[in-house]
Length: 561
Image (cartoon, rainbow, N blue to C red; front, side, top):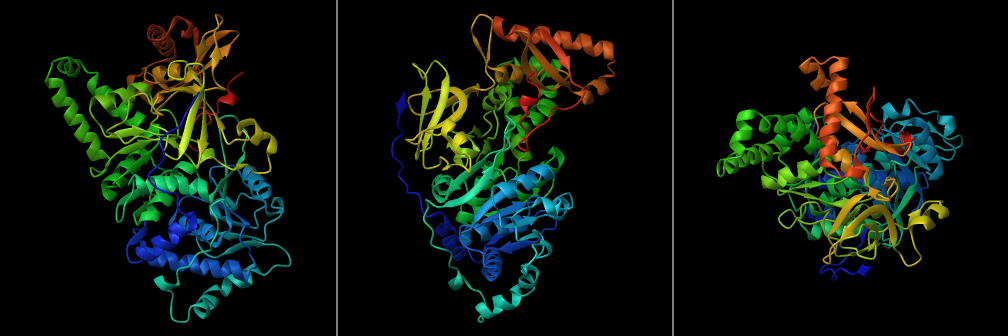
C-alpha cells in the first residue's frame, strides 16, 4: 500500500554547484582539521588544493566521467581528493581501507578506474600486476607516484603541477577563481561498493541527484550550519559518514575535525570533549557499549535499584545520568543521530526515559544513504524516523501499519542501479523506480517506519510464525557474560551462537564449568522474555569474535549453516 509523503518545501540543488558556492562564501572559515596534528586548513586553502589537483587531472588527459578510486584511512587529504574528483566531473570510487587487498584490486578493476589514490599502508599489500587498467597509483598523503603504467608520464606531470598551477593562476588563486564543472544532477558521481552481510559486493551507482538529495535535506534541516563543529569518526568511504560527516558540513561552511584514528571509547570520548561538536553522527555500537559497560552496572546495584523505584528520586538520578552522558559527548550538540544498524531496544528505551537527545535514522548505501529521519524532539521510540520529504515509502503488506512486510522506497535518493550488474539491479529496482530494501517492517500513516529485521534473515518456526533473529539477539546481548550473539536455525530448532564477554568473565574469575552453568541461566532468562516460538534450545559458545563488515555488522552468511 503506497502512501505519499507531502511535497518538500525546499528544492534539490545542483550537487557540484553547492560546493562551488560554499567554497566562495566560506573562503576564510576553517574547513578541515587533523585531530592528531591539530593542523587546520580554511575553505580557501582547500579550494586552492582542489584547483591544483584539477590542473594535474587535466595535464594527464583525464576526462570528466573517468573513474578514480580512493582507498585509505580517513584524513584531510582523503577529503580533498574526494572533493577534487567530484568537482572535476570525474566519478569517485571510494574503497574502505579495511577491505582485503584482493577485494581492493577487484573493485579497482571492476569500476574501470583510471587512477588509484591509495594510502601507503594499503598499497604495500597490493600487487601492481593485479591492477589491469589504471594509469597510476598515487599516495593519498603526497603527490608520490607508487606506480605508473608503461608509456604514460604521470610521474613527470606530478612534478610539474605546482609550476603549471602558478602559470594557470599568475595572480594567485582567490575566491573569484573558484569555478567547478557544469554537470547535470542526472550524471553519475560515485560508485560505492557495498560490504554487506550477504557476502556479495556490488557497485552502487549514485548520481548528483542522489547525493544532493541527502545533502540538501541536511542543509534544510540545519543538521550542520555555518561555523558549526563536526567530528568525523565514521568511515568516509561509507555512505553514512560521507553524507553527514563530510558532504553536508562542507556544503554549509562547517568546521570538520577528522579523528584519523580508531574510535575506541577512550579515544572518542576525549575527542568529543575537545571538539565539542554541534551534531554527533554515530553507530549503535558506541551507545550500546557505554550503556552496557558504564550505565547498566551502576543502575543494577542494590541501593541504586531501590532508589530508582522511589518516585521523584528516580527523576533526579536519571537527570544526573543524562547530564553525565551529554557532557561525555561534548556537551554542545543538538542531538545524536544513530544509524548504520538497529539500536538495541533496551538501550533505546533507557535513553528515551532519561530524555537524552537522540534519534534513530534509517538508510542504505543504495539511497546514499538516507531514507527516514525525525528530529529527536519528535522521534517515536522503536521507529526509524519519518520518510524524507523527497522520498516515498510503502510496505508490501495487506495491513502496513500492523502486519510487517518488505519496505520499498522511491525518490530523489534512490540509486541509478548496480554498476555493470543488470541482473542484480532488476532484482531490487522496478521499472517505475521502486527500490526493494530487503528490510521488513511496518509503516504508520505519516510515513514513520518501524523495522523488524532483514527479509533474508527472517526465520520460520515449525508452526509457521515469522521469527526476527535480530530482536532475540538484542535481548540476549544485554545479558551477563554475552559480548555478541547470532540466532540461527539448526535442525529446525533455534540456537544462539554467543561470543562471551571475556573481560567480565576474567574479572569475576569464572572457570569453564561456571561459564557453562551461567550461560544456561542466561538462556532461561532469555526464554522468559521471548514468545514461546522464539525460545532458544541451546547456546553454543564461539571462541572468536564474529567476522564483521566495516560498519560493524556481523557477516551472518558465514554462520548460517
